Length: 512
Image (cartoon, rainbow, N blue to C red):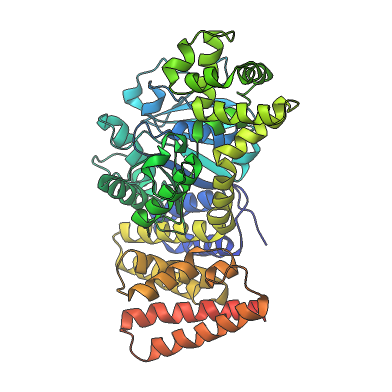
């Protein structure tokens, strides 16, 4: 069941328990800490906040547009791409430019429905942009578009850190505001965008970025990655691809998943450009007609044109060069080829069917499904864990040992309740992922699997198994972890083992 705060709807029973804890503690702590708890309550009632991060030119904003279903985030280099932009639900479409001092300036969207390329303000004084949209997607998830990591623009990096709560106060300004921001302003989940090669600094950037989230420690519970621009991967460079672009991208994404493990739950291939065009209404019936004209060309001519972008736009044919450039900007050569193949296979295919085919070819639906599995289905646990991390940070920032102990004791009471076991499991997972508890590799893998999957068969490592098989396996593993906790485990390992034992036992009860 869910409940509401004064600010909105809570994600589930864990969020309700944390909200109640905050309300009970508010009269027992300092005014400064109590005000921080009020901000925690506000955030608990807000949609899950997902930050889209990645290196510069990785296609983050294009992917944001695809996820939202509207071309609103600027994708060309300009003022706005150097700012953090929060896309959230609103009953009226509007842009609010939020300045470092806290005051706001309301702006309309550009005529094409996007955020204006130039804001007409001094961006050095801008904290971030709030974009409100009447998009159903944003009712359950606020999407935060961030400047590219690795950018030479230090100011952009600083703004990202401050909004995500990584920056510490350096002046003696509004202490409460700064403390609250540092404690609770971080996103609760991360979608990290990579391209063909995961470099060492990608892993470092992901670790630094996710450490700035509200949970403070990121892992497979609240972070996934996508391999964007999958259509640019030369299939001949990937062993086992059989010359197929998408197969090559899937193999490479799987390898990248191993490199980024255990920081992310998964790495999925996606073609953000095609996804944006298909999902945002940018692919039109005129585009479909132009593709039909191209499909009518002879094979030799078409194959020559599809060899390279400059050849495609400059070759002499009946389709105007401007039209071909427009198709290239929307679909790139891979999308154009896929659409032409579909038209040649079925000459009666409609523009709507072509759009759906392109959407399927983009990989966006799989990304959305994974977002729903990793983030939406676990929103209650993710938000509650992030809120508890914020409550703990606020108590430590108070400087009052008695207040800190009071908050600590209240949290321990909450975590002792059976319904809070999910938080214990998330805590155990974080300890193992962060290396705070050293576990044998096979056991660490098992903790990772049990703690980071939402589906029972995936948690048990038996996809497709029958209910009796799952129940028997859960009971067997529950007994094994209980024995390990009592015999042979270090004290730290034993703490984790008791949590995993309890997780298996609860799964068995559920299946019985």
